Image 1: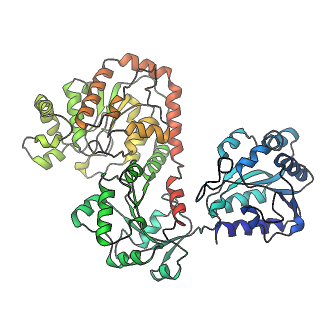
Image 2 (image 1 turned 180 degrees about the vertical axis):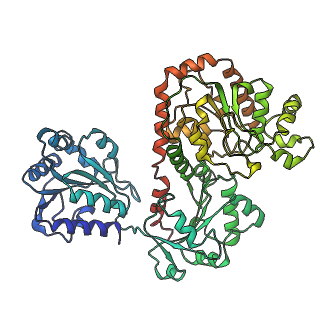
Image 3 (image 1 turned 120 degrees about the vertical axis):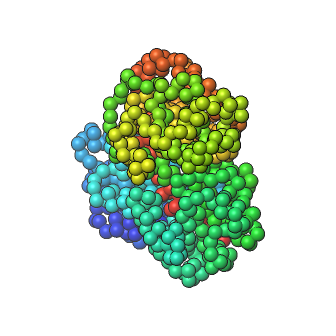
Length: 585
């Protein structure tokens, strides 16, 4: 069943109620895409009107006042603007003024701008604008068949006013995801598909495990093979010079333009060269790169694809952010804003990485460690790697200069001898790797050591990789737990977090809090030094920071709201439903 089939079925079902009436332009006689969904509706239940959108909405309210369930048609949001007076000032306010509830369903279409651009008057989407002006109207944005079913189930059953946005460009779309599985591998088998489609993952409700024979038998449907990766795809391509799928699947993708393969790296990013490598290997193996999808956490994937004009499809997954924000909410919950704190900084480190180690050494060197609640849970990794030998300079490659290393030999030795160091507020927690305990972020969230410091020095997962921004749970933590964020990461990390989520980094004109100019610096060593210099400056301004913190409580609340909203992010869900009907034919 397609999107259009479902709408047609719903309209027929609605017409079976004797009180239902349909009103709109070009519905009795076909004239726009919406009218093609009414073929099964009796003509005597339709009222054809000329181009008079406001009058049509007024008539819809009048018919409802007479006891009818009214389905009224507006093929474009651009046309609904002409009915806004009746909709917002009368239909929306009718219940408030009379205590009577009308029953009106407004079908409104979002004009398609592909493959041809219809012009500025025919492709707008005013969903949020209309919703923001309404008091009683319920709004539904339906991009899938499931969303259509859910919206109309409510709208047909209960009295009220409903604006249901549909997408005529999706009319011929199917809504079932067809998976092809390789049961010989746990990263490609049906059990993996069951896991990634569930309600706590990508929420793909309608899917089918298919056989490879179906690919050639049903050329009008798309089929997908998912490869779940636990490491960088670029490393594999570099090492093998082959696309990591079987010869069977390579032949299938060569011969079937409706067969696609997805490389899914959920919790990690990848290096910038992954797309260029992939294109080269596909060319060598004569594989159509436009039938592959590379999905990982690098926020710059689309930019990199455009830069080299790659044919392979890309998507930036938001799963890590969605899962961790849910955990923050479930485990961290609600807590009071704590204006007075023991520490100026927090700096929590789990896995040993060169920039994290260098940051701790820098804090100690500049006598800032005493003002910091800090941890190094896997400090023993230094001994595991180098034993009792001196840590070589190349460990700090791209982070600090040789002269800085010489100036911090005492600090490097100090941290090199640490086995497991918990923060002051983690001492009672069972997160000691040496004791066989596994770090549990949920315990960390419920413990909420973050509330005891103003500024969270976040040592992100990536620092010295070019053209990569990887936003992990670590970057979201200060925003949820009412802290100033100082994120030690790759170039443009802060910029992209602002653009994607709208976080407040407290660097607006007049704030004079954290100077984030280092976010623009491409040289890793210079950027690291700029960050350390900024921490030194902040360390001298504790009272000013504490005062600003107390006076701007509302801004920290707003940041937390943004994190909570990420829980319900549908970026990945919408992406998967979109590609069901993508064509490379």
